[in-house]
Length: 124
Image 1 (cartoon, rainbow, N blue to C red):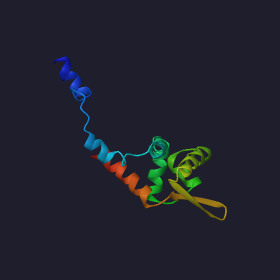
Image 2: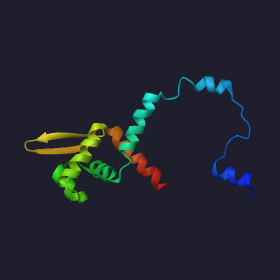
Image 3: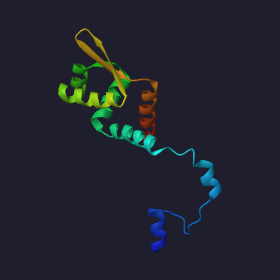
Image 4: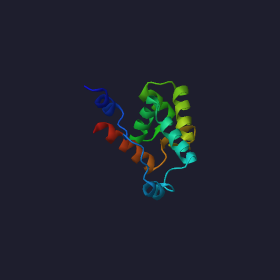
């Protein structure tokens, strides 16, 4: 196989530099700002941990108290609490207090959809 063909399959790029000003102008005000891109990257970074994904999976099915969630996932309550705090700081989960118990659930339908679409994507 030639070197050029090998490079094309690894990292296909234009053979010449040719900017299309009309295309660039059309989309220049639609591209995410650095601040919004950073926020979104942080969200995906939060989701980039298998333990947090397993917590999200459980919470996609039902609301859980911290004790039950820790038992279900075979984690310490301390580790579970820490991961829930990270998820809460990214507005992915919420909690409610019922007496001495604290119950967690996904924050809203957007989070449920994000999680579901992620699973759907990897299952394709």
